[in-house]
Structure formats: structure tokens, C-alpha cells
Image (cartoon, rainbow over all chains, first blue to last red; front, side):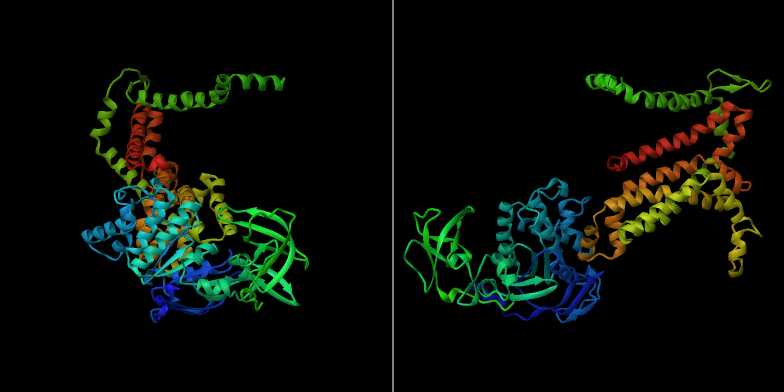
Length: 331
Length: 286
């Protein structure tokens, strides 16, 4: 992967033994994480897994019960948000409704006492970067969701923070726009070279954008690695199902996992050293690909996306795959 | 029978509208605008100084009398000052309270606090003001008894007492709109402001204050106009001090047209106040 070269920097953010409870709920239950300078790190997990709470503690909106957060060598865990060199893009943008686009983008610079001409100039550069020239006088209410999203991004980036925190920033957009913004966001990150910490529950988004992914479950990081490492070698059953699809089967008394795209279906021929017989039961069309459901004679069903032509439902088929593509999970 | 009425109403939207609005319109036109018009007309009449009867000839005599006598100007300025001070005091007390209720307190606590703030409104106005009379009584009042040992003295009856009493009475009318306004204000705007480097005071001035301004205006319309028209509080705890309402009340029995003339002053002030508020655009977002 070409991404690997970007990941040799020092740890910019270090999180150690971080804990935070809300009442009886242990939202964050002992998190350790090093985030390198310039990387795009995604905190991925289902809702309630603690990823957003970690982000809010890095930003300073929540105080940890225990543990530390170090930013560029300095413990910031007890500092208020305004004394941390990080900026946040909020889930629903949090643009100031009474200010126009330019005033919103300028806000951080104005707080810091940057002169009017200087901050205006910088805000206009940021506006150009997000391709919203000519929109400086609009109020947030007069913008579309995607435009608001970009303004929120510019408002944060214009301050040149050492870390940009993004809290499910694409969640409110429709699919088409979301995919477009994923590409733009990734390109923007390469351009500005700022460390991005990105929170999402969308595994595809995480896989396509991140240098590394930290998978959250029940307030802990279950696995940390590149998208490829996580997809090919998920450490737990939870991850194998949360990230991508998987067939969890038992062969020769051993529980193994195999991704649907590595399983091929044919009438007779085989493409691997593992072979199972079965009957084609269903065909599920999902746009770009089709999933095929096969009931095997070993008593379980499997899904595959690799199929030879001219198969009909009810046909007796052969499933085959390379044994080396199988993976075990520790838990 | 009831079914027939319902069916007829359903078929005839104009009849429905008539049934809906007759009572409120009658009330507004006859009781409210009618009274206001009578007041205005009376202000231009005079009184026969010998018989004491109202002479219904249109003239500006009352207004000339009012504007030529410096005493009335003083009363107007004093009343404006008191109403302004009450509004400022209520605002200063209400903002932190409303902020706590809307943004910090747990939902259950919020409900209790709203109930507590509404409770004094159920008690009689007179009871509350007489209570303040006992509190403020110089020498043997509750305030002197309680705070005397630490060197604090009751302000006694007069301007400060009126301001305290009226602020106490109208405070809920300021807290409730502010609470509603702050509840509508998304909390993440405050997070965003802090995130962009703003201290709490900066966030308050640049984000919170502009966004709750309509609520502030709504609250101030209550505290300001209710103070402007008050005369009972001034009578009970104002000592010798008079407000516009007292002057109207004194003239009411001896010179009705002149009382009406003076009563046009608070009406005019409120009209100007509303006009100014309208210009700020605050009413559009109410």
C-alpha cells in the first residue's frame, strides 16, 4: 500500500489508560492510542462504543475520569477546549446561524485577535479551497447540507490546528454526496498535511479513507491497524462481521472464516484447495454485485460473490476457495 | 343535534371561522381598543373647575399643563429609570438562572425549577408586596434583623425598595422566555465556539447573547411595561416616591381628563419601545 510511507512520523497525540463513565455506563473503558503526525486515523465502531466520547475528550468537551491525553508532548487532558491546538468538525456542523459564511470561517482568527484584513484574506483562501467563492454573504440556513459541511471544514482548517477532529461529519449527507465528500476530504487532508482523527460507524468509509483504523467495541479498542490488516486479519468475530462480510464456518472440527469474494461457485470445476458441495438457494442483487446463498451439505449456508454464468436457483454446485484465504479469530 | 351542528359547520368554513373568532374579536375591539380609545379621547377634554364635571370640548390644555410643569417630567424620568433598572436587574438575575436550567441542570431538575419559578405567580400580588414591606421595614424589618449584625442596613422605603419589589414580582416573566430561548440554542454551538478558541465570556457575547436577543426582548417587554404602569408597589413600599401610575391614580377622582392625559405617556413610551424593538428584527424571530 502506498499509504504506508505516510506513517513514519512521531506520535502527535498519545492517549493512555483513558476512562470515562456516564452514570453506570463505562463509555470509555481504558483506551491506549498513539496517533502519528500527518496520518488519517479513523475511530470506527457501532454507536455507543465510545469512539465519539474519546474524540470529545481530545477536543476538551468532556473531561476524562482517569488517564491522560498528550498533544505534542504536553498533557492537555485537564485543559479547556480553547487552550488546545485542535479543531473540530461537528456532526451537524454547528455553524453559527446569525453569522454569514465568511464571518463563520473567520471566527477562530478573530478570537485570536488576527487583524481584520489578515483574517479576511485567510478566510477567502479557505473559501476558495472548499470551492464556495461567492457564498461569503450567505447565512448557514441558505446553504445545502454539503455546502454547510464544507464551511464547517473551512472554519476549522483556517486555524491550522495540529489535529483536526471530525465527528461523523458525513453522516447527515445522502449517499452520492457522501461518496464525493469522502474523496474530497481525503484529498484535502493530503493537501494540508494535518493529522485527521475521524469518527464514523460506516465501515466502508473507514476502509476507503483511513491510513489506520481503531475499532471500538464496548469502550475499548479491539483492533488497531491499516484497513488491509483489519480486513484480512480481523482479530475478533465482532470485527470480522463489523468490517465487511464473512462466512463463519466449521470444517474438519475447526472454526474458520472466509470472505464471500474469495469463495467461487461453479457447476463442477474448482479454483482452490478447499472444496464444499451444496445447492444454490438464493440470489441477492445489491447493485454493483450480486450475493449468492448456497446451502452446503455440511449443514451450514455460505455467501459468495464469485459465480460462473448460467447457474439457476436449485442447481447443485461446488464451492471452492484457497485455504490460505481463511482466517481464524482469537475471540 | 350535536351531529347536525358539526355537519353544518364542516360544510360552511365561513360560519366556522365566525364561531371561532366572534368572542375574541368582540373582546379585543370593545373591551380593549374601546377602552384605549376612550382614554385617548378623554385626554383631550377638560374639567369644569367649579362643578367638577367633564367638559367634552376638544383641546390641548391638559397636554400644555403637563408639559409646562417640571414635576411631571421628573415623574416620567423617575418611572422610566425605575422600569429600566428593574429590567436590567431582572436580566442580570435571569440569564445565569435560565442558562443553568436550560444547559446544565438534568431534565428532572429542570422541571422542578420551572415549577418553582412559576409558584410565586400563584400568590397574590398584594401579599407579596406586603411581605416585602415587612422585609424592608427600617429598624425592625426582616432584612435589618437578619443582616444588621453583618453591617447591612435595609434601604428603607423609596426608589431602591420599588426596584427590588418590582424585580421580585416580574423576574419569572424574564426567566421563562430566556429559558425557552436557551433551550432552543444548540449546545454544540457553545462547544464550537470554545473549540475555535473563545473563552466563555467571548462565547457569551458573540454567540449566546445575539441568539437569545429575541427572548431577552420578549422578557423585557414584560418587565418594562409592567413596571411602567405599576402604582401599588410604589404606594406600599415606595415611601413618598411617586411613579406615573400614582399620579394617574390621584387625578382619577378629581380630574379624570388630566389623569387620562398622563396615562397616554406610558402608552406612548411602550409604542416607541415596540417600534424600536421591531427595528432590531427581534420580533420576527419570536
